[in-house]
Amino acid sequence: MRVESPHNPRLREVARLIASSRDRRKSGRCVLEGVHLIDVYRRRIGAPETVVVLDEVLARSDVAELVAYVPPSRMLVVSRTLFAELATLPADVAMLAVVPTPMPANTSPGRFCLLLEDVQDPGNVGTMIRTAAAAGADQVVLSPHCAFAWSPRSLRAGQGAHFLTAVNEGVDLREWVAAFRHAGGRTFATVVTDAAPLYMADLRGRVAMVIGSEGSGVTRALLDVVDERITIPMAAGSESLNAAAAAAVVLFEAVRQRS
Image (cartoon, rainbow, N blue to C red):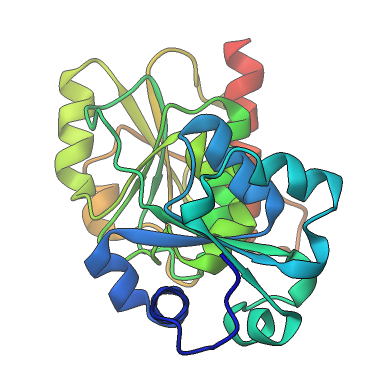
């Protein structure tokens, strides 16, 4: 369907979802930007609800291949001017899609998990989901005060990883840790000082790794219930790592041990 007016109801709905985190949460939908993200969604889940595509790229091979899987009734073809009014990235991203926010079918603790407590930056959240998926984690579990995992910025940072691992939001992490321990799991929290070095910890078996907020780290309340505290050894004078970098170091040390 060719759309010429910015007042088209379906196009306005897409614009509203892009602009408002509240509306995305309320409607249970998220917005994917770019061919790669949409294609990962299509391969893992199915055709999006609505796709907005830039008219001048329809003949491009990667776009044409993806469009072939989308029912015509779900397609909105727009000019560069209209596309630029919608996207938070340049028009070169070529496509946008509205999809239902995936809900994990199983929220019970897995065998290899990443827990995020109050991580505020959407880019960090998306990057850590991407790292967790690459490490083979079963779940990424977010506390209620984390940034929204399904925001456009988080999705861009995740590069499709949101659809490759289970993402559970708004979870009471103290209760989750208790349930994980009951199921035979051990939880490790990363701290800066006064803890065993990461490389001395046994990260095999059923484990969960905890990363705290960018400024304050893991809260005292959560530290009181985890099984072990670990620290990443660093050169003298270095205070800490970025939260996403710390998650990568910890997760892939676990991968090394587990393999």
